[in-house]
Image (cartoon, rainbow, N blue to C red; front, side):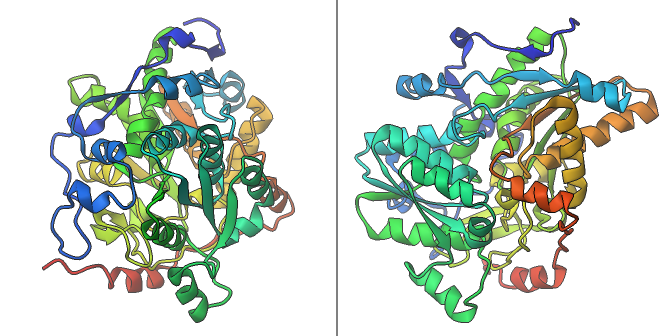
Length: 453
């Protein structure tokens, strides 16, 4: 192996297709169910929210889906993204492990989210949609959809979880710069929001509530559709470009990962890196350890139940079988706002149930310690969400040191933390607290899971 630090693909090698893990799962996933009839959803059931092409992608079992030329042209604004060998961190840890990271913070919005935002905006514009509604936690998804909407002439209305809206004012500014409207959730604009505020005027909000508000408005207008930044199958499909590039770049490096790591909230950046490698494994390739890392204050994979649940708090969405803490569960207001979701993407949940991946939960102060250590050696300030992946990579590298194993570690650094500096200020000032997972509140929420007979 050479002493190269960064591995760049030529744009001529940019993948022309998205990869679909559904084609390679050894057991089929449980069907998505209609919330009223509890029967498998038909394409017509999803039509009020999504254009036909995205509905087809949500349900397809084809291994590859062609990327439209117009989407590829926009991807070339920042893709292929670099694969970077963290040599300085390796030296600081004195580990025999080789640490690589795929850096998605080079996108215009600063994270991996435009990979699907651009695709969703394109298909909506093609279908004649005028406006998109959506939710966002930390604001990475909201700013990415705002960016994509500006390119295709779409109005974008973003419901941002209130605690994150208050913590991260510069994310609001970025969304507004791209032309979107940003609204703290819960709000007085929807029945779902008004119901929450009537019970608790100071409710901090959650992604489940913000989804309810965005879905409610989309369903009321013929010229409006809904866009989701994680969880759904078509989102995982679009994000697969990350892992497909990484496969080629690891070949360039003359190396191959033994361990793959991604943070998980809804699952999109994790799946984007991991699923193309996992697909190779399921088709007879070599096995790898795959770690999904989540916040200890919202431990969906490590503490949640694998069951049918709603994707939103107001129960407007279809029922999906996933790891869930209950749709009415409100996580505490920790700084990794993009990971504050009660459920996990059904594909990621299915992979865990099949024993194909492992799950791990970390408290936030330890993640920030790891993020600062990483920044001081590699120069990039991680977003609070992907600091969980950074900590797992460091822990695995130190394990390799203890065991004398020179394993190869690859993680997804899914975004930079330049809009999250208040969280770092709180950390340095000793104000950052490890928020406790409320197991009693989760039990109450899980007791309200839909009864399917």
